[in-house]
Every structure is written in C-alpha cells, then in structure tokens.
Length: 467
Ligand code: ASP
Ligand code: MG
Image (tube, rainbow, N blue to C red; front, side, top):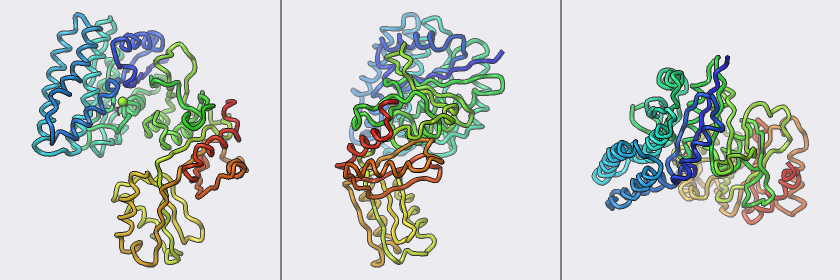
C-alpha cells in the first residue's frame, strides 16, 4: 500500500490567537486523515515584522517592553489552550527569551549584521513551533518538534537561503521519516534554516511556504504520495490583483510554471521560489483558506493542468516600478554591453523586473523597483562606459508593469495582438513590451495612471471573470 504524507503549513494569520489554534486541530482531522503529517508553523501574525524592527533599532534603543509583549502574546495563548503542558512551555519560552535578549544585546554592542538579523528574525517560528508542539500533545496528538536548522541546509546567504535539496532530503530521511513511521506527527518551524557557515539563517520573507515544499521534496520517495497544503487567509491565487479588478476570480487549477510566474511577479501570496522543489518531485500544492475550511474553493498547483490550460490564466499589475532606458549608437554591435549593465545592477543589489532590447541594439530598457531607482541610476552614471557622453540615460518613474500569464500562450498565435489591441481600444499606450522565450508570459510597461485600466482591459479580453 502507498504511504500518504501531507505537509501542512500554517500562515501567521492561522496562528493569531487561541481560537485559531483550535482550528488547527480541525485542519489536521479533516485534511490529515490517516496520512503521515508534517506541520510547519509560521510566526504568529506580525511577530516577524516586530522582530525585524527591534533588530534594526537595537543599536539605539532597549527593547525590554516590546520583547515582553511578544512573549506575553504567546503565554496568553498558552494560558488558553494548554493545561498540563503550560509550565513546561513557559519554561521553554523563557529560555528562548533570554537567548533573544542576548542577541539584541549583541546588536547594541557590535551593530547589526546579516547573521544576527537572521538569528533574531527566526525567533517567531521558534516560539510558534514549541507552542504548536505542546498544543498538539496536550490534545492527544502525538507530535515531536524537529528543529528546522537540523534539516534544511542552504549554501548561501543569511537572509534569503537557497536550499541544498539533496542534503536536506537526506536529513529528512534520517530525522523526520523515522518519527512519521513511528506514528508521530512532526512539527518543523518554518522560515529557519542553516547556512554553509553552519549558522542559523532564514529563507527570505514568507519563507515558511518554502520550508513546506523543501520538506515535501525530501518526503517524496518511491513508496509515498506527498501533498502540500498551505493554509492562508485567502482562497488562493486570483485571475488579477483584486485592487485593480473587482471581478477577479479564483484560479482553481494552475500549473507550476504559471504559478511560478505569478509568484515571481509579486503575488505576495507565495514565496517566489517555493514551487520549485514541489515541481521537481511533482508534489501538488494546495492553497486553502484557513477561515473557510469547509469550502472547496481553493487553488491546486500541479502539473496535471498544463494540457488543458486556457490561453491566459491571469493578469497582474505592479505599481511601484521605474523604467530606465540606456541609449546610444555606441552600444550597437558591441558585445558585452548588456553584461556590463547587468553587472552594475548586480553589484548594487538591484532586482530587474523586466528587460527589453530592440534589435537595432541602440537601447536597453530595464524595469526595476522604484525604491532602487536612485541607486541604480547613480551606479550607471558612475561607470566608465555608461557614464560617457556617448550614452544617454533616461529614467521614467511614472510607469507600471502588467504581466499576462498563461501556459496556453505557447504555440497560440495572436495572443500578443489581442493584448495590444485590448489596450489600444482603451487608448492605453504601451511604452515597452517583453516576452520570454518560454512564452509563459508577456510583460508590458504602461503609464502608471493607466495601470488599473490596462489590467481590466486584458482581464475582459480573455474573459477571465467568467473562469
Ligand atoms: N514569519 C516569516 C515572515 O513573516 C515567514 C513566513 O511567515 O512565512 O516572513
Ligand atoms: Mg508571516
């Protein structure tokens, strides 16, 4: 018989108070069934933000009161949901509080660095992990906490870890699967990992989604079926940003490739990299609304849908972007120009959202986050080549990006034409356009004032509100 394993991640809003903790039991009962379960809690809502701002201000200010409030919030939940295990939970959280206070004290003396910031950021999940473990056992559900840093290993940074999947999978086999086979549920705090220096690090904001899929990658073997459920406070992915298109509809099925495009494009709902480990092992990922647990409105991300994908799945808009155009005949037929430009952006840590270059090669357009604009432009101007009088640098900070996503665009002629004419009909000018050769997405730059209208026009054109 095949083994079923389910990884459930609980977002911060699903763990906000005692009532929410009680709902966790229902999620386990109704969606866990007879499966082997791995439970991944995020920090209680808002806690990570609080920890980050404490870390950033710790050189200037003492944080005893704020720290006290965070601890108090956890203890209050414990008072409500724990009896026998309450004292042992309080002992554990007090030990962690000391550790956190010490780390903040070090920031005061040494200043803040990425290592200390990552260590401090992860406390929210350490607290919620211990609380969840105690809570489950209190309710007769045998559960054991396995520390994330003993399982998820990465090869790089402190703040945006990229996992070593095979090493991590070996740790899952050694440290998690034996417990599951003994009939235990396993709790692994989200977000936290260990980096190449052997230090505690984190997987980037929203990283608990990533934790869930990284663990799923390790749990999937020849004899098991694995599924991930990401419990959140929304039903799932939508056909458009609801703030631009009130008729946006839930997407029920979507392929990994399409959902990745949406996640990369800033659908805050998913960690941008979290679908990669799931896709590698064909593990389906469900996004479900924790507060409407009985509803079957949800998004399922898998590879099954690709074959019958509708042409366009979703359209999203992004507002806070700026467009930089680097222009000059001196760039024509000069190999390495684009590389130079990208290297500068890389050194400045500027994320590029879109690139387009015309085949005449006399200009390159980059779209970046508005917040990075001044830094990016200064760096370009400082450089020998781009700073010379041969090159003109043009910056427009009144633009927005529209991304049209759908696997069905591949091999379907005329989609770009329909997109452009939908905008043309509403007199919306397209300032730049790019399509990746994967043909999964077309990205357009329009005036920011037209952004909303552009999203609506494309949403209508492809009848996305009708599903
Ligand atoms: N607590 C972390 C954050 O807020 C990770 C997560 O919630 O997934 O970014
Ligand atoms: Mg969170």
